[in-house]
Image 1 (tube, protein in one colour):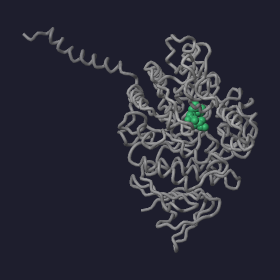
Image 2: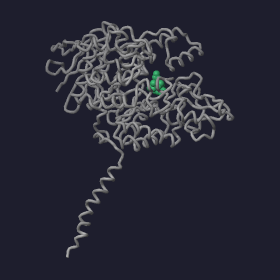
Image 3: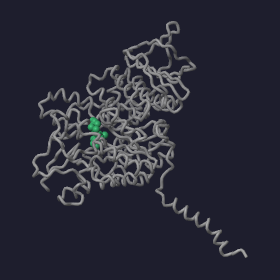
Image 4: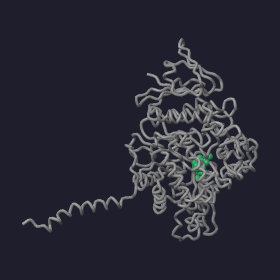
Length: 589
Ligand code: TEU
């Protein structure tokens, strides 16, 4: 007699096992399916074009003179029209704003001037609905001195948060000198409350977190998970190369601050922590992370991003933006050399970003293109063509898609940036020629890159109905989105064409890069070969016409993009005669 009870029990077993399995899956962290990313293979963050938004300068909707989330929401269709695929937004967390948000007092709190968490979620969902991914700025080399952790830590030597930061008891004497990037008096600040010094690589209001403390690291991973749970797709790790410290606090040689990244950056433990971060956050949530700063050697950079190391996915170095720090500008040969050596260093492994401007630099047009009204359009189109033709993820900065320029700030009274004011104090106390100092600051200060976005020619460039936190560049009547939107020859529409060209030509992403006629004094030419394509990129960096002899010439049929309406070729001597700042890409067999 077949035992019916069991049988039903027997029938129940698979159901019970199914129930067990389902519950097991249910308690897994809610993670979006990680994008296909086989080690050094293809990945969404390699194929995309990143657009950086400086939130307080993008679009203000409540008239307080500061940009806000609702302003970004209002411009989501505009962002989609650019063809960009990722947005990196600078910090918008609770902050006393000593360094415009790079001094965070609550990593899960939204600074009310930007809106609410609901506004943030609506903005994020709006981006995702348009296929745009979101990269959050994670500022954890340091916090604000108003963060509860630091208020606790400085309150007494045996406070449980004491070693969330780096303290040097004053009874041991003055700590060995350490350079601060923003404070001319150095990186150790005396605090009478507990008769001790605390470390701050940047401003004294930005005390460095103690990454050697596992509790601090776990706090950061939990913060990153908090935002990943909301759907954030990537993280930009601010000043992270400095996060790990040699807490034996050695004496550094005289003048070491000239090469502070070498002496302070990329401590060995940093990689242990990044592997932890990868296992805790990056891999489980299928997000990507890019480091600001890549050490001082190619190996440093590879150690950060090579996929088999299971740390970060991308990094950006400063060697390219450092090419044009004074009004004398840069030399094309150096430009070719720096970009080509980084390309060959990363030709087989690892991935870097390609950029020439961000919130820490003056405007790309003044530093790498030509702001002269005669040349601003073709030269800016040329630089945008270049950025989206190189091997690496292009990072473009708000306003560079319309050719926004530096604003003239000849006197120190107008500056609010903690870095500029720190440099001014340092120059003054070291007896520098302050007139010359101000000319250079007026050319390369960060505030040049932070003026309100120029949407149209109405009052305040359509940025705000109130008084902008920083004055709008008076050239907004000429340089603005609305003036360029319907003009097919504009910088804006060339930018839109170029993001499309990058998407449709995978050789521009994964193709091998090869410099052509390295010695040419005016023209930067290179090929990108791969993914079944051979592409030639030709860029005349000169304000004069220039020509180049080539084995292949552009024709009606193989021309992919050209920032002029015509191309002048001479089939006899196989020469291509380029107009000032002419930029074109064509395919060849
Ligand atoms: O910058 C870190 C950094 O390395 C700076 O030296 C930066 O290169 C310099 O400001 C260039 O002018 C990051 C942020 O990008 C910057 O905006 C913050 O002020 C800084 O960290 C502190 O958080």
